[in-house]
Length: 232
Image (cartoon, one colour):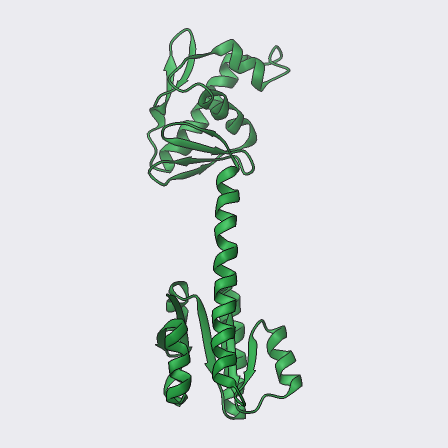
């Protein structure tokens, strides 16, 4: 069930309105002191005002919340002019006037918005998953941002050249890739600078990044006089 926070004003809503919330979401009453720390746990936020003083506070809360979160926000009041509604929309909030079929409108707005947001988040995860160029038993490699994703959850970001090295090894895990093969695939001008030094230096930097991310750097294994191997 969706988690929606109601800022400072939950007791101002009548039983019918509260029921609208309970039908659509898990309600979390909040206050100004704890709203920031609770935002990461919420799917949406509702604010209410009844006078100019409270409206000013709502503006301040909106700016604060939008600077640190992208969750949808609803602002509710008995009196919301068309200009005020436009202002709230520009600030990134849905403005709902408490009149007529208010409870049904609020219920549908909560339900439709939250379902839309969550339905869009799922395909994004699938697309992201499909971006992995190589997969081994313990590693997934994302060519789009040169990142290495490990089974235990660590993510290591590499430079383009470091990524090319790791990807070359990941194509054939547990098999030696010869020095010459790696050098030819990484550098066109390998004859200008000691290519074996350049390769060893590149491997060193990749291992250092692995170590800093709590990944065993020895997954890149040196096979003396032959080459390197991704050890799985």
